Structures are given as structure tokens and as C-alpha cells.
Length: 148
Image (cartoon, rainbow, N blue to C red; front, side):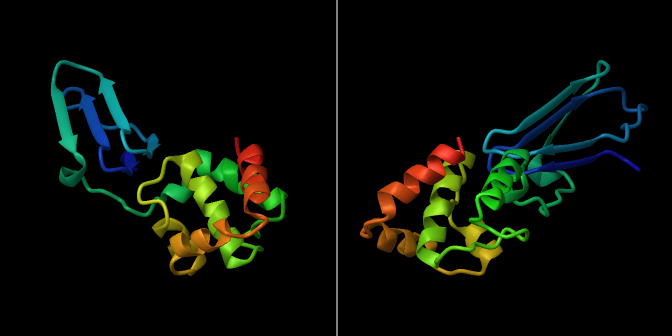
């Protein structure tokens, strides 16, 4: 098996330096985030590849990053989502959760990953509706405190 590298983010970058005759090892490298980079120095030959030049596997959702998995575990333990990461909350309250998680993960775009996962449209407007409810401030604080 050759090395598998998964990168997400608009500014993801991969840099590796090794002799052309050297083969890649079998590590799996997973990176996410707007400015994710990978550099390796093995020899004197420099290879720089942009995300668009690589065989890019777009299977990795930003909601599957190590940090996102940590947040999902907390959310499931608190009963906010089920084992499949689907919300156990109203759509408006789920939008508040998505908003807080998007902040924690520095997501851009912030709504689409949750809309795709949860099959809920227009989370931005649902969050706006929640903003006018009495529960909003306490719920948002609860989410923020738990997901720090």
C-alpha cells in the first residue's frame, strides 16, 4: 500500500523532499484546516505538489477531523446527537449546536457540512430564529462550555 494523504481546506499544502528512487512508506496522513501543510525532508530532491496536482481524496469531511470527533463524542454524551451524529434537538436548537461547533472547528463554509450530514436545509436561518428565543443564550453557553 502506498502512502495515502488526505487534505482538506482551501490552503492545504503538501511538500515532500526525498530521492526520486525512494518509495513512500505506508503511513496514512490526514490533515484538515484552512492552512494544513505537510513537509518531509528525506533527501536532496524537493517535490512540491499542490492539492489540485495530487490525487486528492475528498472523502474526509471537516466533521470527521480529530477535533470534530472529540466534539461529537461530547455531543453524544450530552444527548444532543445520536450515535450517527444526527441531532436529538429541534432543528433550531441543532442550528445553534452547528454554529458553536463550526466556531470550534473554524469551519468555512460553516453550515454546509452540517446540512449535508443532518439533511436539514437552511441552518443559518434556523439559527437566526433560535436567536430570538428565550432559550438561546443559555443553550449557546451550555454548548460553548461543554465543547471548549
